[in-house]
Image 1: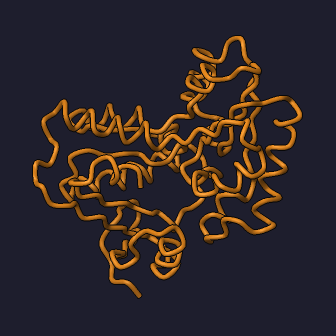
Image 2: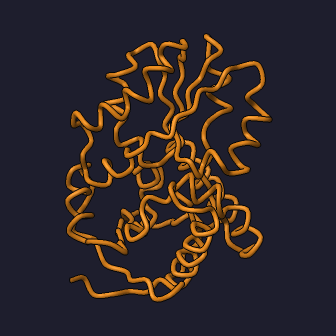
Length: 256
């Protein structure tokens, strides 16, 4: 994870709401409600900053969360339309994202502000999030989903592809093999980690300890499924604990 690389002394708690994945197919209101509950849970664990590591959740809930919790610093995700526009030489860029991200006001605002003078091709990559959740990062099925999305973009001379979903960086090697070296693939994670560092520094919240921070994962779904995925992407799988939804609240639960 890019945040742990750039902020190695910070403790990180990652919430995987696998009970409700994929968010991209849900209504913005549903996703906002989940985001509020996850925020409440993280604040109960004394989180000093909250990163919405999901473009769909950012589109649905970031503005609302900032208004509702003005004392809490939030970092959101947004498709990297601006850097893609600055980078393109062909005048054509591609954006891969979920339906909810494309429907959100945040994405439309980005296109209005920065997308003038270029042609933007969009694709929702149906089924890709589910493939990645299953740890299926390089199968023929996953490749076919990506080829269906990327082939029309390549025909249109797209030279920059924006990943507008935080699942998609896990298949960057496969994407790059399809589009070739002449197409730039933009991973949003480094910019998000830099913004997290900046906000912590501004608020004097950076951990001054010389020791490495603790990375933990919590899931509202099957812990074995999450552990297998973490092993597949070379992340520690021995730090998974379980959560349960009780109405609109997220609580600690025994792993079964």
